[in-house]
Image (cartoon, rainbow, N blue to C red; front, side):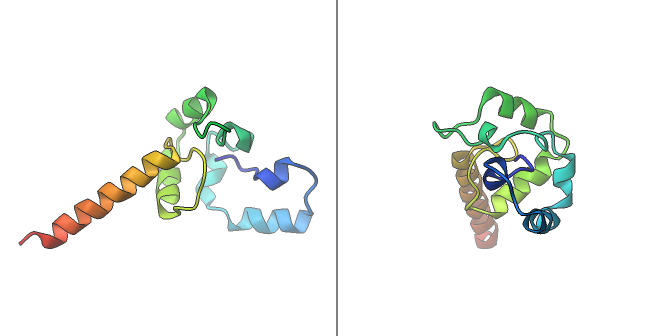
Length: 106
């Protein structure tokens, strides 16, 4: 996801709030292929990513970090780690199912 949030891209932001927000972000985000892109690229009206978003994620050096981050937070919207919200729901469900099967195995 882009380093800019929707609030930042919409107008002026108090410098202190911006610095605090940036300090809370995972370090891997500074290496993300999308770091200078608009959030709008990853959150579209139709719910799917743009072709540009898919291209960025496909070549991103921190894609797996991004995907792990997105899988850990079910409230994230948009395209993260090369996956849509629907794809991440499916991955979480498959992971829970596999974990349950491992626990049930003798």
